[in-house]
Structures are given as structure tokens and as C-alpha cells.
Image (cartoon, rainbow, N blue to C red; front, top):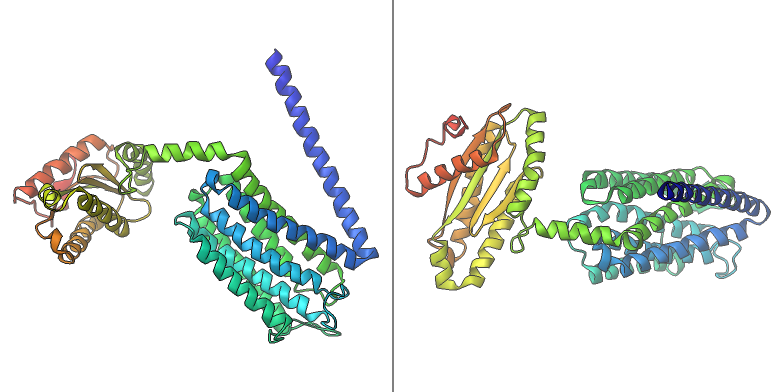
Length: 437
């Protein structure tokens, strides 16, 4: 009873907080609109100043919470927004009527705006790459610093940046086309993020996509104004601030609200990952089998297993030491990852034994085996110490519609592998001999 009352009370508090936030948003929106009607320069100072502050906070929080989140994607976004905020700051202080730079007119702040948005759009395209690779922090900061510096110099000192706004005429073709290119780049960023969505927490993925969509709408509104103090300009600035806030909330959620989720997820991943090769270990392999079996059933394809074991590995280990042996296993892990598809499962099953589980079509299974053999032979030829090292492989296949019994599949592949070790390989042209009975 007490628990029910407490739960009901918490729900009422949450609803009250949401209602308060909604009221505050409405008040802020109305206040900003009235401010833009009375003194547009003041509105621009407030909205841009706020956006710049949020951009800097995105960077600070992404950087400071990285040790908890381990999220290089958001750290990259944070670095990008720091430099976007720097360009936006110069856009703010150079805005027509601010009086910081004398005699600039309305074109330079518009040019700085387009530079900042290009920086933002390109960052959205590049960011998904850091969902699956490490971020070179120093190099990224230096590159963004150089690009930002070059952009500022080209607008404020050299005056060589293409014109974006002409007083009395409005936007130039370069500015309008630039905005459409920016929208296309952001759309590409959404597509790339969608393709890698499994590597990002669902809530953060949704926030990033919503932010990017709002940014596209904001940019489209900036193709329609002819007055830097006009309604479409007002709308674009407000939408931009909203998109920044959404990303800021995403960084807070990842780095501050949910750090323990990331810690537990990392612990779970480490328990199913081989520490040496980065491939699945035995536990991770069995966790993934059910998912792959379901995929095979949906596609009505075979499930093939390739069991791989090194020949003469112990002899090489004894000759060149265990550290060299570890490097060989690491290299093989990279090599086998390069030839498999995204949905395939590869694992270090133990020692120098590896398993590849795939839903490839029947005629593709033999090709995978051949491709791996060819890559390994090239690799062995490249290093004198690897001479004498070889691979024995065993293949087993579960037919479409047949119930997947992973233990039987491994046993059959194991028998085929030892038959190959003894120099009595099966007829590789007849895949049917590898089918489970």
C-alpha cells in the first residue's frame, strides 16, 4: 500500500515537473518573439549567446564525462561544437549593429554563419565513424582549430570568402545553394548514424536524429529570408538553439545520468570478449548464436560454421616466444574480421582455435573458406617467422529450415577439420557432405 502511494506520488511529481517545463518553454518562446519584434539585435544577442554557451557546455561535459561513458562519438561531437561555438561567437559580435567591427555590413556575419553550419554538417557526417574506432583527440582538435582559424581569417581579415548576403538584394546564390548542401550533408549524417544505430544507446540515437532534423528545418528557413531582422531569420535562430539543447541533454544523459549503465554494459561486453583478439570469446559466441539462428530462419538460408585451427603453432611459440604467438593471434583476429560480413559471428574458441558462424548462401560458404586460406597464405609469406605455420579448417552446414543444433554443428566441423589435418580432405565441390544429417 505504501509502495503504491509512493509510486503514485512520484508520478504526480514527474507530471508536475513536465508541466512546469512546458510552461517555462512557452514563456521563453513568447518572450523571445516579443523581444525580436521590439529589439531584434537584443533577441539575436540573447539567442546566439545562449547557443554559444550550450555549445561550450556540450564540449566540456562530453570531455569530462568520457571516462564514464567511453563514448568517442559524443566526444567528437563535443569537440566539433566547441569550434562551432567559436565561429558562432564571431558571428554574434560581427552582427550588423553590434558595433564591435566597424563597417562590416550584413555579409560577414552571414558568411560566418554558413562556415559554422558547414562545420556542423560535416561533423555529423564524420561522427558515426567514432562509434567503432578510437578518436585521435589531439589531431581532431588541431584540425578543427586550423579549419576554424582559416574560416575566420578568410571572412574578417582577408575578405576572400564568397558573398552570402547583399544589402538591398538579400541572399546570394552561393548562400542558398550552400544551405541546401548543408541540409544534404546532415541528411547523410542521419543515414550514417542509422546504419550504426546498434552501436549507440537508443535514447541518444533518437536525440541526435531529432536534433539533426531540426537543424535541417532551421537551415531551410535561412534560405527564405531577405531581411536579417525578419521572421524566417528569427525562426532559424530559435530552431538552432533547440537543436543545440537536445544534443546537450543527450550528453548529460550519457555522461551524468547513466554512467553506471555504461559501466555495466562495458563489464558485460568484457565478459563476452576475448581480451587478446577483441573477438567474441566462447561465452560471447553462445550468446550470439540464437540471434543468428533467427536471422537465418527469416532469410531462409543455411547456417554454416567454419572451425579454424593453426598447425605447428606450438612449435612457432616455442621458437619465438609467447609474446610473438600472441601477436600472431591478434593479427589473425584482424585478418578474419576483414573477410566476414557485419552479421557474421567470429570467436576465439580457445587457444589457437577460432570459429566463424555465418548465414551466407550455400555457394558462398566455400568461397569464404578459400578467401581465408588465400589471405593467410599471403600473410605467412610476408614473415619468415611464420614459415611452417598452417591452417586446418573444418566446415559444417545446417540446411535452411533445419533446427540449429550448435553442438552437433561444431562436432561435425571438428571431425572435418581433423580429417583435413590428417591429409584426407573431403570433396570441397560437394557442399552436401558438410550438411547435418
